[in-house]
Image (cartoon, rainbow, N blue to C red; front, side):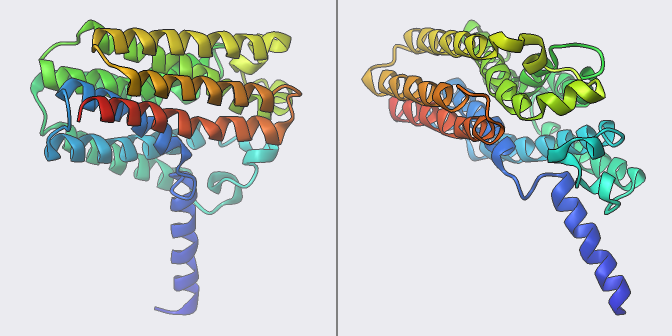
Amino acid sequence: MNISNAQMLAQKWQGFKQITRMDKPIGTYLLLWPTYWALWLASDGIPSFHLLFVFSLGVFLMRSAGCVINDFADRKVDGMVERTKNRPLVSGLLTTHEALFIFAILVAAAFGLAASLHWYTIKLSVVALFLAMSYPFMKRYTQLPQVVLGAAFSWGMIMAFAEAYGRVPLMAWLLFTANVLWTVAYDTMYAMVDRDDDVKIGVKSTAILFGKHDKRIIGLLQLLVLALLFTVGELAAFGWPYHLSLVIVAGLFSYQQMLIVNRDRDLCFKAFLNNHWVGLVVFIGIFIELL
């Protein structure tokens, strides 16, 4: 292999890491922790190795696939946004055909994992694919793309309960709703970083829709998330460890409100990143309760 080929391979690998966000794992964490909430609750304790493997790897594959299709959808506008102007489809590290090929491989691998589950869960996985594919395009047609993202980020929870129960119980829908609202809250913080650029290029978001009421609405969503998670704890008959986790989450939400108070871009992004700890703390509470 000559040097030019080696350099090209290195560039393609760099483009692959960037378009799948392998170098930015926060999105995987935000998908993984709620999926683990559901897996542990649906299994009434530690899930089987098979389920843990399928859902953990499935989260990674579908998050990566979602990032690829998002960059494909935004390839003509990312260059006009400060935060995204160096993404691989803008910089030329990857072509659109290569991006679609990567997306197809990731989706095929995820479906291969889902094929090892029950038929009912396999059918639900089709909904997961539809949500992942549709979210990036919702930014053109609705002011609430974060709701679609929330559904995409939460559908693995529905699949976890479906696999364990053969149906989707009330607890699953409560968790699903809590996670959708939480996703809307933290992704609005994320969208606040790009709000000025998004207004210029015509991309829609809840940050734009909420306008000057953004901080209040995020706070309301966070309160609703806490209320729904408390209700889940009551249904599961959880004790003080879980309730302590919710107190800590309330503290983290308060900290995030402090960060976004002046709508500073960097601090809004910091508030968004802080939500990783929210997911982890809730999981620890559930894990301890089900030991």
